[in-house]
Image 1 (tube, rainbow, N blue to C red):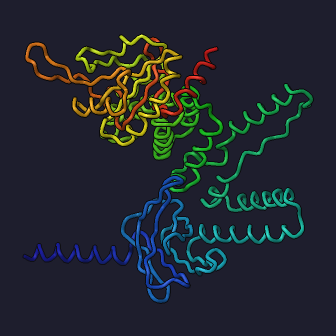
Image 2 (cartoon, helix red, strand yellow):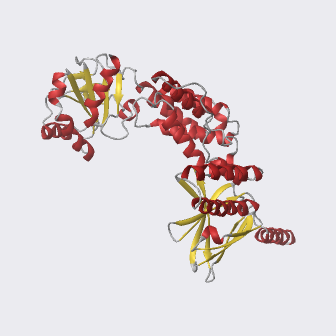
Image 3 (spheres, one colour):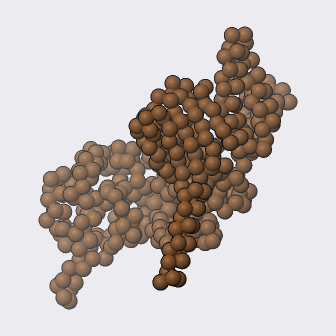
Length: 461
């Protein structure tokens, strides 16, 4: 009993010590706010915020965020009154601040946090400088002088993370082009020079090995803009530029974040064929660098690669074995046509019912171009299948269902896992096949099929 009492006493003392010395404690006072809740969250990319704590505001606007779990450093936000918020930089997680809802930046006073003192001083200084210059200078002069003030501030506060945050918003400054520009070729050379320099130096102002940037909106925005505006949207180009970017990232948390952001962008991208970049990234940085990921993530990635890789643009589509309405075998390879539209649908799916008439309206175009439509029913229900065919009057299409009668037993057998073999996780799914049944397009909106084929044929001329 004495031993047990001692253990309980020790635990009580430890709990008391933790309560008196929390891992983080942020005391706030917001004038104009009372008897409500406020939230402390950190950014995770540009579109997500992760709530880390909630505090109750008293009648005089006071509240405290605190806890025994250490908070990761980065840019946080304090959210109040539904859609209103302001930012705080968390490095030292024990400080206090006071402000007013009527002017959060102007009235912000911070104690024991050099990062946040500098952060809000910078905002006030820049606003003041802008208002002062606005009355005396032209827009171009204002931009130039503001840039000088900003650069000086960054240099004077180089030891602060705030300085890195502000620097991350800067664009590369392209040196003057020294050659004469007189002809169209000269203009083309000038553009090439500017584009090449800008792309090469695009990430100069972001420390790609400082994982605090994961908890800011800046990194994801930079990555998104880089791959949307500066990278050719073809699988090989995306893969190459991703490799170049990741080559310089050694910090594991940052490496993991960047790989995830790029790979998830191209797994189901709206530009045809870019999922090849996803396969490249998944094989090289998920499977190839298992130390970055947990075993569940690696297993799921292997499963996803196994589905997507055989369905990349240029690959021959896996043979489909179906039964037609007459009970005969229907296969993809047996279809003789210049192109084949593979339309995988669920007869009970409302979206499929919307898209089928749109596809049907193109019959004249399909006939003129010798294009066949193979409509594969994903649901193994003959009644629903035949009702769908009759309702939408698609008897002239190649209609098939994955139900096969075993000649010996007379029982029904199924050959195809549509989700695993054709990535049919949502319906309808559209594949466009060439004469040899190679995939040339996939997940093309039904009303964009003609535009796609015109573009495809124009590239081959």
